Image 1: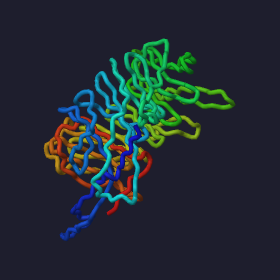
Image 2: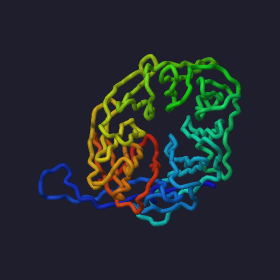
Image 3: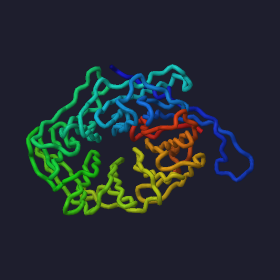
Length: 397
C-alpha cells in the first residue's frame, strides 16, 4: 500500500489580530497561512486522528487500545503507535503540490500499516533509520522505509541473551548492534557477540545520531552515561566507548548533532569537539515546575513547558522566549501535551481545548505564538507533528 499524504490538505489558514510589536492603539490585521500535520491519540477512545482546523478527523484504522503513545520517527514521516501489548505503525509521506489550492477539501488521510507487533514488556525507540521494538525480551527492527509497503517485514535478531531494552542499530550495512542484557552493554556483529563494553544493569534512556550513541545506565555501583562511537578504516571498525562523567540518571534527546540531557531540573548539552569526542557545551537550569520538554529537529532549540508558559532556549543556554499560554487559565501538567517539529512546537491543552502553534520565521531570531486554535476534543493523550526533519516549515505573513 503506497500511502501518499498531502500535507497541503492539512493547511490551516487563519486571520489573526496582532499588534506586531507596536504600542499603538491601532491594531493591524494580517493574514497568516501555515502548514502543519498533527496526529493525535485520545484517552477515552481508540481513535487515531489528524487535526484539521482544530477538528479531529479520524483515520480509518484505530489503535489497539485507548491512550496510545505516539513516537515520531527521526525522519519525521513515520510513527509508532504504542500500547502495553501492541505496536502499530503508520507512514505519512508528504507530497507538496504547488498547483493544488491550500484550501482544497479533498485529501487522503494516512493509513495504518499492515504490520503490527504484539507481545509483552514492549518498549520502542528510534535507531538509525529504524523503530527498534523490544518484545518478550528480544528486539525486532522495523526500517522506516518498509512501512508504506503492502507487506512490510521486520528484521529480527537472535542473540543468546534476554534483552532489557531495545537494541540499537549502530551500522546496518555491517550488522553492528548495541544490545543490553541487564548486566552489560554488548556489541554484536550479526548474531555473534563481538565485544562487551560497559556495565549497564538498567537503561534509563538512549539517544543516537549519525556519529554517536549516548546511553544512561542505572547501576548498583552508581549511575553513569556513556557515549559509543564506531569508526571504520581499511575495512575494519573500531568501537570506542567513553564515560561522560555524568553520575546521574539522565533523559537524553538528540537533534542537529547536539545531545541534550535533563538531570535534576538542569539541562546539560553535549557536542562533538575537535578530538571527535562528545564534551559538555553548556548547562543551565530548567524553569521551575516544568511539565515536559523537547527539542526542535533543525537547531536543537530546547522547549520547556510549564503549566503557564513555554520557554525556549538555544542549546548554548540563552533564553530566547517566554510565551504565556494566555488562553489556558486552568492548565496543569496533566492537561498539556507538547510536540516539536523543525523550528516549531505545538502545545495542546485539554483544559481549554486549545492548540498553540509556536514557531520561528526563517531568518528570524525569536519564536512567537503563530496561532491559537480551538480543538474539538479534550482528551488528547499523545501527539506528533509530521514534518520534513531539518527543513524550516515556511509560512507567509
